[in-house]
Structures are given as C-alpha cells and as structure tokens.
Length: 405
Image 1 (cartoon, helix red, strand yellow):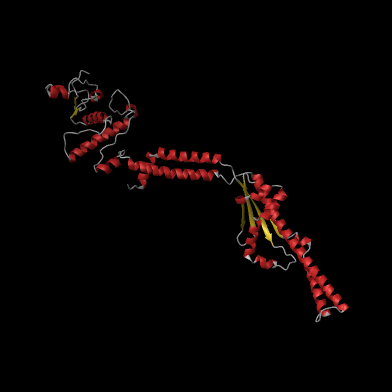
Image 2: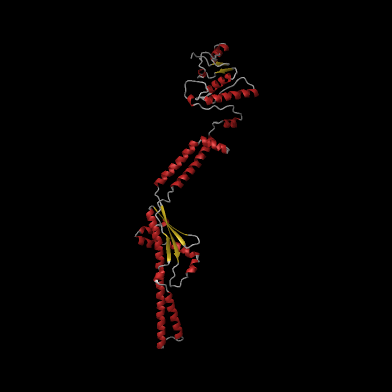
C-alpha cells in the first residue's frame, strides 16, 4: 500500500494512541534499566611525556621526539603492570593493579601529550586513581633513568680502574707489548670526560613527564547517560510505533473518511455526517436541529439533501435506498433526517420504514407504528390509509406497521 505525506499524517492522527503508547513503553523500559544500572564516572589526567637522558649512551631527546613509535611505547608503559603496581603502592590501593578495561590511555595526535582516563563507580576514586597512575608513570620513568644512569656510571668507573691498572703496568714494565703511555692516557681522559657527562640526580628528577592537567572529580556520570538513553528510547519507540501504525493501517479494512470511500468504490461522496455524542445510547429518537447540540449534523444533512437533488438532475431517480452492512450503523437516523431535510426543501417525500424487526423510525416523527407496510401487504389495507403525516410539509411516513405501539 503506497502512502503519501498527507496520508502518513492522517495515519499518525488516527493511530496516535498506538505511537504514543509505544514511545512511553520504550521510555519506561529504558528508565527501568537505567535505574538498575550502577553509575560510572570518568576522570582524565593529562600528562606531557618527556624523554629522560641518562648516561647510558641512549638516543637523544630530539631523535626520540621524532620517533612516533617512542610515544606509543610510553602509552603501553602506562598500562604496564610495573606502573600499576607502583601506583597501587603509592595510593595504598591494591585494586588498581586489576583496573583492566576501566583504564584508557590515548595520545593526543601529533603531540607528546597523553590522556589517562579512569572509569569507576566512585567519582572521587576515579580522579584519585587517574592522578595516581599519572604520577606513578612519571616516577617510574625517573627511577628507570636513575637506575640506568647509575649502571652507566659504575661501568665507566670500572673502565677507569682498568685503565689505571694499565698505566701502572706501563710504569712497572709489565704492560703487554704494543701498549703505549699515550694511548692509555688518551683513553683515561676520554673515560673521565664521559663520567662528567653522566646526568646528576637533579636533572633526572626533571625528566620523565609533567602532570599538566590533574584529574578532577566529575559530578555527572558518563554511564548511564539519561538524556541520550531516553532520547534514543523515544526515537526507537517512534520508529516501532510508526511501523506498528502502518501495519495496523494495512490490516484495517474499515473505511473512515470520504477520501477512503471514494478510493475504494470509485464513486463520489455526497455527504459526511458528523457524530453527535448526545445521540449515542439515547432511547429518545429526535431529528437534527440547528441548536448547539446537533447543529453540525443538521448542516451536514442539509448539505447532503442539496447534493442529492443536484445528483438527480444528472441521473433522475425517484427512489433512494439507505442501507448498511451492519446493525446500529445509523440507517434510521440518516433516513429520518434526510427525509425531513428533503421535504423542507420543497420535495414531496414518502419515507418507507424497512426495518420490520426492530422498527424505530416512526419515533423520530412522534408518530405511531399502528399502520404500515405489514398492514398494506399482509392485510390489504389501502396505501393512502397507511401513510401518516406530521407538521413537516410535503412529508409522508409509511411505518413498519403490524403493531399497536
């Protein structure tokens, strides 16, 4: 079934209760899930990773900064068990060592700046752990540099001691052949120069990294996200509700608008009678009038009568049949009001009541059901005697008859 935009709008109006119900159900369902979830808070500590130059003869600062793999290596080092163990020791919190997926480390593109993100059910703990891991990484890097520098210094001192022994051997005449005092002296000077180049403790304490943006306690959780979750639930509810409305529209074979009727039977609609709430379940039958209660229906019947007269000029007919596929569809109400309208417009009208089982049309005109079709057909009563009239001019009623009511 093909729908146009106007038809979609009409469907949304007719099935609005279904769409609204599905949306509310999705929102309430997601709200129930959210309320059962433990809030998760996130804190971010930002650090600048700085190479530490030790006395081990490693690559210099410039070379490391130009090496993209070096920064990625530092990112993996932040996640390492050694750094997490140091953080756990500093904060006296062994749980940090099993932080797992709650720790996220990312490198800001084209920089040596890293973000350390920690998620936890406690916003205070998330901030404390993020800062603790950042500080532990910087301390770990510096400890590594101190250890490397110490080892480098010890190695140079050992070589200096060996060179001193060689110089003493030259003085004693026990040196190996080919060894000269000049070469030994040059080697000793080179080693002493290297020893002077070994960084001191103060320079090592400035390397490793800087905590440029400490993690703060965030009052709002990152999960669950109430606005985003409820908005998504409403959107899904709208989609599902809309699909359900279209499905019901396809399965519903009732005709509810003049446009639908014309589309199905390919004949023009002459009128559309609005529902009068006061007539529902009202045992007292009455004709539509121009008052506030049934005024719209009165105008609709008046318009229907005019349209019928216009149609008769195209296809003349002396008889109009009013029927329906089901009971209580308003045949008697329509017949009575249309007959009264046509009569008031100057047309001579005879209204024939065809409901012999539950006759009621005579009640609209406050006439008895004493004489009618049954009396004419079954008892041979003359037709002119069975016709009744009231104050409406040009109007006659042939009731169902066969009753004393």
